[in-house]
Amino acid sequence: NNCVGARNYHSFLALVALVLAQVLFQMATGAYQLRWSLASKTEANAILRSPKRFPLAPLTQQEFVACLIVLLFACLCAAYLVGDLLGFHCVLIRRGLTTLDYILSQQQRAADEPPTRGADGWGSDAKGGRCACVSAPFFRIGAKV
Image (tube, rainbow, N blue to C red; front, side, top):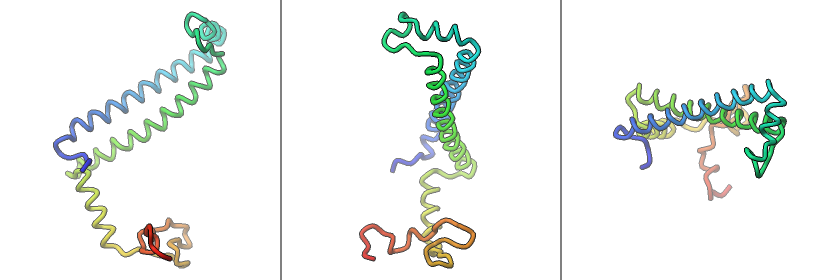
């Protein structure tokens, strides 16, 4: 069992909150560097081309801006994912559940509900809903069709 339980919730939440803070700090630093690099192009080019600062791979200002944009996008994705994880676990704590309790309740709920099929028999309906019948026996690995 690798689930987060009552004993380690505090350290887990602290870890996730610190990771979120680190990602947000990295995002703020990247945004500041992007603003600086766009505001003072000549100074940025001079610093980035300096062999004393970057002896192995000097960059141009445009390359630096492209790298910063990629960094900001990656940080935005990471902040969303880590923030979602933190929010999910805060909701679980508010409801008095551990992750194991949540997983077991979801499994019980899925076992109690029969698989639904749409009008076409394949799990979609006229409204464009998702396929809810993936747990049907003919979708199991190794099952003969």
